[in-house]
Amino acid sequence: MTPFIDVPSHDVLAFLAAHGAKASRLKFIYDHLFRRLTRDWDEMQELPAALRGALAETYALHPLRLDRKDVSALDGTIRYFFRAGDGKEVSAVYLPEPGRVSLCLSSQVGCAYACAFCASGLVNFQRQLSAAEIVDQVLLIAIDQNRCPTNLLFMGMGEPLANFDEVVKAVRWLAELPGLNLGPSRISLSTSGLVPQIRRLVDEKVRLRLAISLHAASDEVRRQIMPVSGRYGVRELVDAARQYSETLKSAVMFEYILLDGVNDDPAEAAKLAGLLAGFDNRVNLIPYNPIAGLPYRRPSPERILAFQRRLTESGLVAFVRKPKGLDIGSACGQLGAAV
Ligand code: SAH
Image 1 (tube, helix red, strand yellow):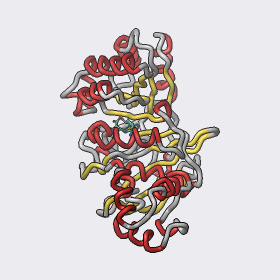
Image 2 (tube, protein in one colour; image 1 turned 90 degrees about the vertical axis):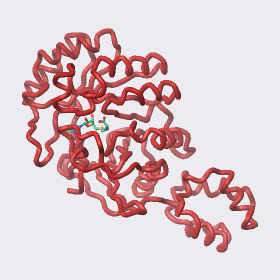
Image 3 (cartoon, protein in one colour; image 1 turned 120 degrees about the vertical axis):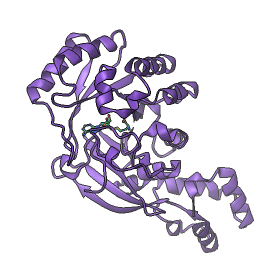
Image 4 (cartoon, protein in one colour; image 1 turned 135 degrees about the vertical axis):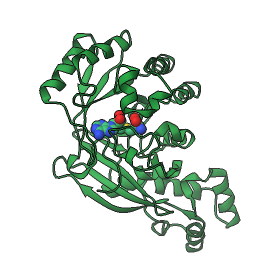
């Protein structure tokens, strides 16, 4: 069944006309879906029953179905599990913090990029999510929580820029949806570093907060942990990020996972500072979150601090990201198969 969110408004207008309904019903339905956060066609009691029935037979109001959720006992993070029409599982994470609510969204089922430290890379790529399925993660969580998010993160399962068209469509919808009041500065997208697609973001003027999973300062180290780096070198990647930042006047964030004994040597921090010199953007250090079956370890707190200090001494702004929902497998990199 066609997801309603995916249907252009002129087609909905034609459908309404064919069923003898007024054009003003369109705004009413959008209002229900995006502002009143309606679950089901049946809740739109003000519509004539025959029209409601016809809509329900033709369009799925929500392409995903809420399957279950796990709540973290540590910090209130919630991992949502949805089911798509074809039975595929889709995960998203609800991250409540004082003064803000972020949602971490998935863009694909599985992931083809196979980063050595990431659980999503252990799940074979299965398929792209449609823009409607991406937007629906936001709507269904907003319905369940009875509140709208303040920030969206394209940092869940999948490589968002490998699903370019649907992700960009979803970003544009989400930035404009009437009920959400989000705008481009509240939408972050993290990429493993697909250089041509970063350039496409520039060409198509897709404004958002871009995050680059850099994770190493040299091609030599990066190749050990990220197969994608065989295609694009770190210099080329940083140049593309710089072009994005300068052309769209939008800050870029660099993510750097800290893996004990792999990329956490202070000498690597110095290299990183050299690579990012003169580039006024911040670095987010992500201490490794454990994944069953993987050989990596998180560095000691002293070593993490030493790495951070080395970056700040070189004039970079560097933060250490706190893991969220570690007990329910919802921290960065943990969205693999259901736990
Ligand atoms: N594919 C995109 C989106 C994933 S975002 C990307 O690669 O950027 C998730 C972030 O968490 C990325 O920076 C990713 O590299 C990082 N990550 C993956 N596995 C991790 C782990 N085990 N511990 C900490 N961070 C991890």
